[in-house]
Image (cartoon, rainbow, N blue to C red; front, side, top):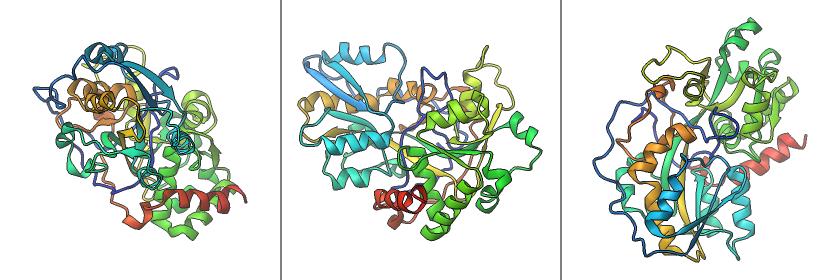
Length: 376
């Protein structure tokens, strides 16, 4: 797997990695994955019965992407018609689920993560269902043993830099948060907002973990004063403001797997000829990285719970787990899933666990950030 340590209930949720903007895949990262072989049989067991039928409403963040035909296969195997509901970033999706919980928008949700699970629990949004396939997910990556959310994938939120554009600045790379909010560095940095973006929330949690709340508010305010740009979401940061997309900022908050995605989507990519480096690289500064665990779960009030259970199992099946990495640029949760060779360009790092108190109420931190940073 990777050398990442469990973050308990840590950070945020689903964003994406650098792929064509039409794909907007959810990225993640973390350590250099070891070569492994897929399980010999589907980890979720036998295929669901084709007698299930009915309609299944699946709500997700916008970065939920699988290969063409994958959802069609699920529909053919089960007789279930799938209706997709794209709900923006994961934070936006959670807010919509809370506002509509008396009349649920969907039967099953994908893309809530470890930073959002406490609020989903407090709002009583989910019905427990523990997929048998969860036994194939390492314990440290399981969001919830009762199955409120079954872990589908994981990754690390991390700073990325554009190698060529950074060289043009003539600056050494920053190595600490204190350096990062200096004018010469902050003016080169774009961050998605913690209030509307899962990677932004992860970054916020990381800074609070490193500096404490008061220290974090001071850091954010100084960095913003010194030129750091805060935008609505990951796509805005990576596909508009980052220099790789023609923007003005060579340093962006993204995922550890983003450098691998840059190579995968380059013209003429050949898995047999992986280059020695990507045009972008990770910058693992203490206080800026966070482990993200994304899951799938059944919404309370589901109108088709049998199909919802089948979908949860399917998301942890061998074929879907193998399809996830080069579509959403996160690591598959099921141990032994084979990765494309390009993931060797996703650098290795250790992420220490946060204290449980930090992750008990992420929304309170978002509210405090809005009050102490955004409104100042």
